Length: 289
Image (tube, rainbow, N blue to C red; front, side, top):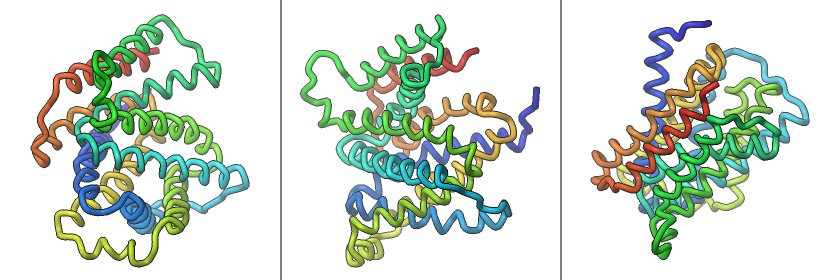
């Protein structure tokens, strides 16, 4: 069995921290700029940030019709995910997004794989899905009065978790046709092209009227939260296998809560904490052989 080096382990911890901190950063950039502009710049900065990484990897870009099709579909799904995440934190909290999306998405990925790809569900997996369902209902507060469901942004987080589950399933097929770094780079390129149809030059330039707090959040979100963290995850997972690094995902909800409290003064709610713990237990049970 290959051993995860100390350097790779430290890199994975930082990748999960970057992903978690991206939720408070998204909350900041959603305060004054529309989602079309924010999404355009996220893809644009991500595209530019990947250029030096491509020179560092030095692998020839080889693709075909199927690879292009997968990239285009997944880029559209990424755009949808960013839209749902944007409105989720706009109407709700960054901590809620960091916990709900991160914990529910693996559960949905497993369930969709079993439903449409014929994957077998064992006893522990069935129990895990049941616990995850209970945890999701607690986090989304799907009990008693449902009038505040969408007011809290939970509906957007739920849609975002489902969208990211589809992204995950589709990405598994992409690895057979494209190098993971090329895959992310091309998704950023397609994202820029698609979002350019939904923005105007004057809309795009409005970001230069924002303050340092906005730019710090946007640059962190696009460079560290997307480009760097994703590259680390793909490289380590490619060397060690996804099963060796998937456990690090458990760090994201904890750090998302922590950063939201520190930088946004958000209050922890018991439904988020209790539901988050239940879904983390569920994801652990689903990942057991």
